[in-house]
Length: 313
Image 1 (cartoon, one colour):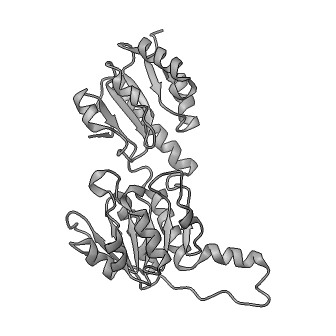
Image 2 (cartoon, rainbow, N blue to C red):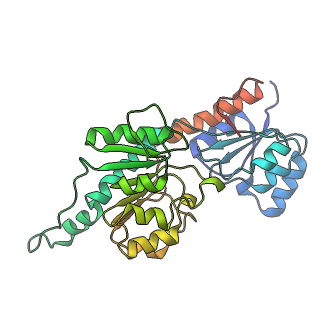
Image 3 (cartoon, rainbow, N blue to C red):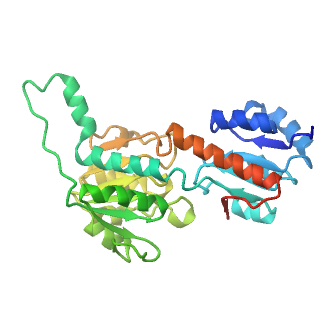
């Protein structure tokens, strides 16, 4: 029986997938080791280990230093954590897990749209409080007829739009370029924000999108506007968002991602007009399994000298 290929596993990104990796490869779990143990292992693996399984939220910096590493197979669609200058210099190929999470992230986006506009979280608290017998819950807003502005109409953005149409929402978007789709295109983000009742940020992370949603965009969204973020926390100026919510510059926000996860600003936690999710966009059993299978399939293709399924960078 041939020897198993060595594989570094950076973190416990998905237990089911990690168990499958353990069965297929000679795995080395860095997160289980002390610093000295890790240093010794990585020295031993020089020239032996060609691939590493990492995650969209964690890449051990020492993996880049292994001269024999040729592939980083990442669990997750986000690639802003990858140092592509170093991977290109060292000829390290990178894969991620796109598309399989589009549906579940879009579902969470629409959940946040409904939760904020219909004040669902506070309605739940009100029903539990026992106050219904002597008071009534405030009226909310209907989303039918609202304009849903999408910042970043990529694969996830298109799935959000597809879900919003049956709610009778009007779809508008801002992208680097106009698409051949039956939605209203705005060449500037400010113009989109001005016309939107609900503005959803579906941007990837990275320097190019950092703090794209700033004070000016939130002011353009206006006092009845709702802001939703299911993209990356780095795309939003959180200080400006807190101020906009505190000063009623915008009406509400629904967030699944944050600038410094898992830390959420206390100011956001204390606000009743904010709905907070703990980055659960792809957190379904089915989606995480599909993401894990893509990691497995990319690794299998790499070791078999076949084309990678989802190479990026």
